[in-house]
Length: 223
Image (cartoon, rainbow, N blue to C red; front, side, top):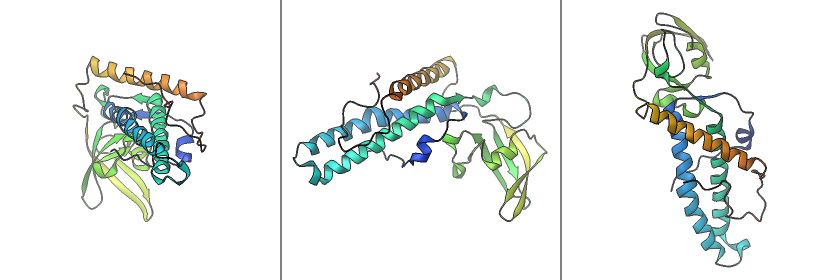
């Protein structure tokens, strides 16, 4: 069963901003949503129903655990729907020019001659250990707009760090063929997320009372 990332209330309720994301990043959100919504949630609902049938729910550890697990899944689903509905999908292959833009891969060299490569991506796909940094991070902001030969200055705890831009690459394929079909699938998924978000709007997404029920599900079933 998939592990549901823990999410704070502050994160869930933070004001919406521009959610720039690559096509590959969007599809990653979509895949997680579909896994949770159409597989993991159904499995937990079934286990919750089985636990509920055992009798006294107030003393039923399995029922209490599954109810909590279902709430976490639903919260994550709502988060994913919000992020997909806000997404501005940008394909870096459409970029032109020699400056660093969203989605490109940058090779940097520090004062000691050490080289690193980073792709500038969205907040929801940032994985520094995998060479992906957010465009809104301090390093991302320091790099955007620069070109090969420029030096980016990054403020760190010990002072300032200078990084020279050695190369800029535009990724070839980002998890799909990038054609019309790819774009239409993303557009359809985004429209579905927007519709689901509208459905949830007046339903009291944050209700977590003691009478929480496994059904009806928080989103209309699709597909």
